[in-house]
Length: 298
Image (cartoon, rainbow, N blue to C red; front, side, top):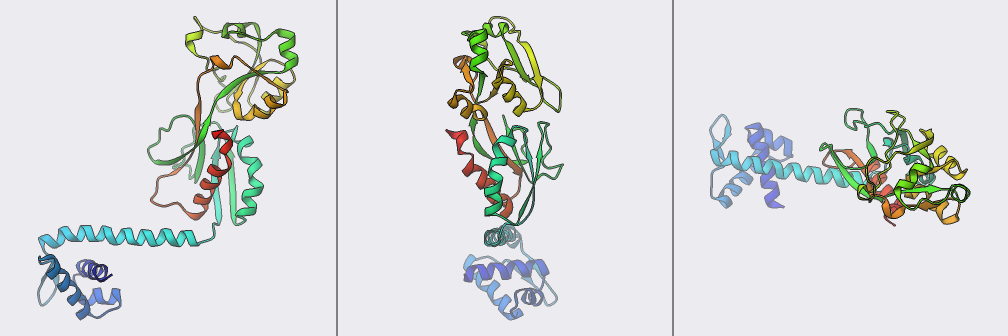
């Protein structure tokens, strides 16, 4: 502690070029500041400050030491700030960007989150467009795929895959596809991205398909819930994230086909603007998602 006090005295004296002014900032006498700096110089074996009757200034060695000491004190201030944040009750508005399929992931959790953190107001935006988290003032975003923005901090939520599903009635009527080429004989229920209007590609392992696979589109839809409903009602085969139809498959409402031909998993991430510390509201939201989206890691 004596070393820290001496470092603080040295830094304030260097910044103000005055033992008197440094003493005012630290709440001690000018004499106490001078003695602390002198003891530090004696311990280090170098002169840190040049003294004159009118002012003090950094020596060459003192300038080098000052830069290091300044960082040490800044780190201490940051540590105190972080601990004070932890002691505060999380509160305030939190702007959250989510993919459209995040509706099925997040909304069922909101009641528990609100009960646990009643002073946090969530502002949810569901969109599949590429949101600029920093420029648009987003506090936190959930996204899938590869991370490309170096301005963002990230925490992995978990992997997920895709499945091709159809209703038992549809498969009994049209047959169960055995190889990817069989899909050309089936009606396909396709997801259309709302932001671009493009159809989602079905990521089938290319080693199992010679040439271009031509899917016959029976229906397009820009809403995942409607897409699941269309597949369940027997309108065709659908390509969907596995966690969204896990219960429907388990109950027999939908059947998975061609599982061995599908490409491997993607990942969900929670992202936030790069900074040294998380605010209390952001910290608890990130931790809550990581805790409650364990089904992604099944």
